[in-house]
Length: 341
Image 1 (cartoon, helix red, strand yellow):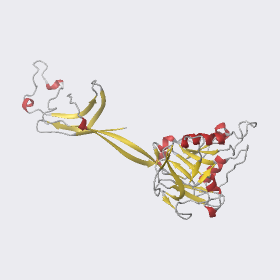
Image 2 (cartoon, helix red, strand yellow):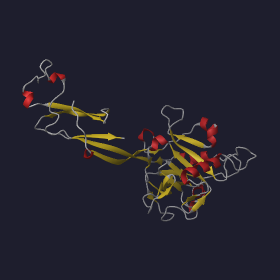
Image 3 (cartoon, one colour):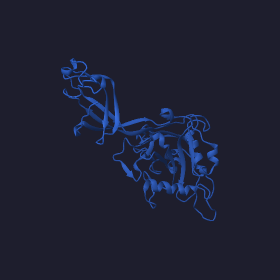
Image 4 (tube, one colour):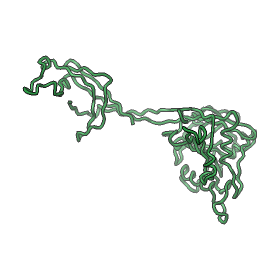
């Protein structure tokens, strides 16, 4: 075993953006949606509803995303305490997302050109979206009482990227896989009801605008019901689930994106280096001479492993060559070691 100190120019850092199918089993599109009756009946059911790719009690079932409804005034759900008006799960959800997304308890959600007092939030399971959602990959079909609509984000036509406390923000528009449908206007939404919501790729959240979705077909809506009754169960989470699961045409396509950083380390055995082996069988134990005299002036070794050590002589990583590399005084080699993290 021989050692060689690496220099600064032996290191190169590279970063590659990798996209992949988002859902369980690397599926790019969800076409079946299930909920858990146990979760719906529990306390958490007042706050959010989890969607699965198969029956929640079956082997292999995983949460794909959660549905939550938030209302600035606390409408759409029963109060925590009947004596304290306006304080309910929907107000809690609204406050949580306002802090997470906007970072200001006095700010408002403005979808396109409309200030909204409520929203639906689809929170993608963290293990699925990895680092972020891939802008331009969204295709979401929703069904309402009047019609159905297909939604995407406007990342491909946005002249600039908007940032909030939660990172990048793109408007949700009528369209598919990043292609905007201009049946309403060039923005892909109705001027009277604003955009259909926001895509927040850096936190894996899709926010949907109830005003845009509940309107008439003429205004770009699909008659998706939303309950804003005070101190009454609105079942808005279940209503959004029904809109997503739909009837026959339901689909939810989305991809993940992550940056894979790699360190490339170039190990360069020069012609005069690594030609003699330190294997005990190479040297005579009694005389200390090279066993085979032909190896004195014309040694040959085979490089099989590269070990990376720190200054304290601690082994940090080991790279195995696919096959032994012959080395003698007439040969130089270049071994590239790649470390992904």
